[in-house]
Image (cartoon, rainbow, N blue to C red; front, side, top):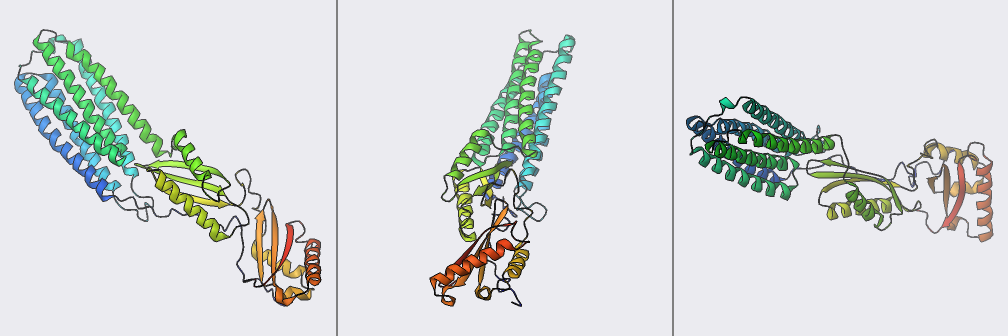
Length: 413
């Protein structure tokens, strides 16, 4: 033979060429989520601005240092709300070349910022309360009307907490949930101011400072928990064990999946990404393997609300521990060696299709010949035996070829 009759053929089944569901572009834009997040944050900015003005003005005129401090605290909330608004705006942008998975991590980063703000606020409250306890002469007696402002503040902050929490849960936004807890901490802090003012009016001037320290500890705990969760997301911490187990069971229940390995998950904003290697029958076609992988991907997205994208890699065997086939030659080299091994055999010119199976560190070869070229059964058996013997005797093939199967088909194509 002067040329190899199968060099241009591409019917190869290998681990390297089996398809996967690529997640090169993930569109995380959700206009409904963005508008709702923006609306709740803008409302928070407006309410906080009104409360801060009222607290500071009435605190000064009413002689309440606690109310003035709470007003400054509320002003810091406006800065936090603006951070949240910026993060929501960035997080709603569509995926682009620089951020192929979208911009959801902007929310995560801003959540860390909110958590730091909570910790700083807690530290500030504690320092201020400690100073007042150490210098009781600085504690004056405020005017009674300051209590009304505190009541308005408490009710407003609690309302913001409930409204923001509802939106956060609806859209699975850790960022909005962090801001919601900020509102709740403000409400509790204002309640302490109420107790402090009431205590001062009754002669117990130390009461607000003691309670303020307790509230500061609660705010610090919330800030720590929120910041810790956000940092875990930034370093790609996976979903909890229960969720991963449910995902694993769903994949294993899919038709055509025989096993799985390298199941990995990670969070991104209010979403979760999954990638997994699934095992299928090593002899199925590439298109069937792709069909199975697509079915697995759709099943996970449909069944788990938090999962927005899945990458599925198809394996014909378990390659988690060791890549057994990594050193094997590629198709071009193997077909060249086959051409050399069978060059002296006249029937080799009828081979019009070759399929290679890379399994367990060896290559199984399937050769296809049209049955019309050799109708006699005995001759076909003789040809198959001679092909196998020639391949097994070839120095460059005998150590890598596991088996040689010859098919006489009505139509090899």
